[in-house]
Image (cartoon, rainbow, N blue to C red; front, side):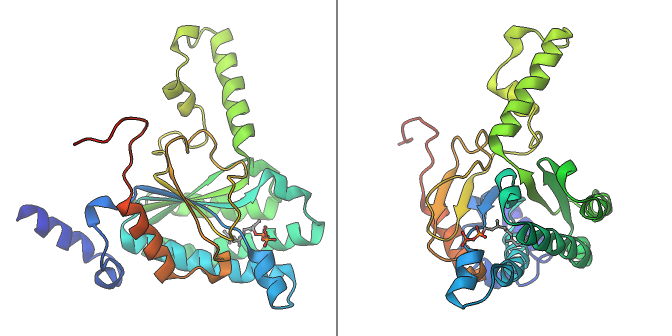
Length: 261
Ligand code: FPP
């Protein structure tokens, strides 16, 4: 009884909670969901629009998914917004993505505050244009005390570079005798990653039908459930996001062990 009361009380804090949680098991909501947002370009091409239009629509989906994740009670949402490889795209596209990111960071501040969402960023953020890092830093600071959900944007992020960076820092600490060689374990390495302090993703979603990981959270997704959908990112809506979480709830996670009877 106490338990039910607690859950009801929590749900009052979320907008439309009763609707969004229909059919979902509140005890099996993934703690951390990572998303590889793919298909903006193809969405635009199908409509004879330019790729930038696709990214603009993709930013709308970001808003929908963030809101929906918060309503469902997901604690960590990590979005792959810009990879280290994306710098190789035509300059006009990179600049448009940066402009879009900056606009998002400015326009979403109130939404983040109202919904108690803490913004976080992982990746080589020093490579972002100065005007973007300025608004990013401001938004990070502004939302630092929020405790409802952590929204992490992977920006200029690459999983291999992240692991290499961690290995270099570990080597440096070993040389300085801050750590012993025998202390180097997977748990220790995790602490040297951008994601230290965050749980590993329970679920990784990739849109657009591509079935690959593309350098996203390589270390952290060792035991994540993966969900691929053919839907292009701008077309992903609340209903499908909800259905994906429902699918996740039906899976049996074994972490390399045998299922319990
Ligand atoms: C992949 O689609 C998407 C990206 C490289 C950028 C992701 C950006 C957004 C979703 C919008 C802005 C983000 C924020 C956080 C405001 P693609 O361009 O590779 O699509 P394609 O494979 O169909 O060409």
